[in-house]
Amino acid sequence: MRTHRQLVAYGSVLQVLHEPGCPLCRFLKEYQAARLQNRSESETHRLCNFHAWGLAAVQDAHAAAEAFIGILGEPELNANGSQACDVCKEVTAEEELRIRELATCLHRPVVADWLRKEAVFCIPHATKLRRKVPLALTPRIDTIVQNCREQLKEELDRLRHDPGSDRSGWGALGRVAEFLVSQRGLRM
Image 1 (cartoon, rainbow, N blue to C red):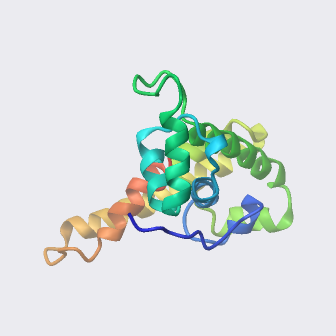
Image 2 (cartoon, one colour):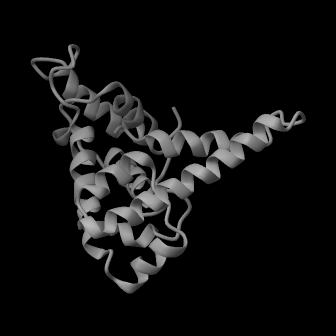
């Protein structure tokens, strides 16, 4: 597999607000890539299928070999799924942290303005964020999700009724998948 390098290291979910798509998904994908790229063998004991392949894809061969040797040396391999993947646990903890961060910053003028004008959330992150914000802010999140839903329905309707669309509009299909279940490559 070819080694891939992470290009951006974000320190806050607020840094990705103006990027396309769900800011929580974008932040977590970068975080996950960084965790896979910078893993040491001592931090890696259990990997799920997705993260084992991810580690093989992004680490240089020597570092990946060291990590996999460490896993192979574990007394009980994760074949039955009884132990949680180390990377999944880290991403889940970071997700919780970033959802709390965003929830506590919604009152800031720059974030409030973003919410009014350009906010996008996938359904999983909107649902989790709703649980962390004051009740008075949940209608705003619901409106954002509803606006995304309506826009995506319009895109899908155009795609469905355009007889000449072979692959030109397939971006809409990816945006719908992302809206429904989060960005590709995130384990939620």
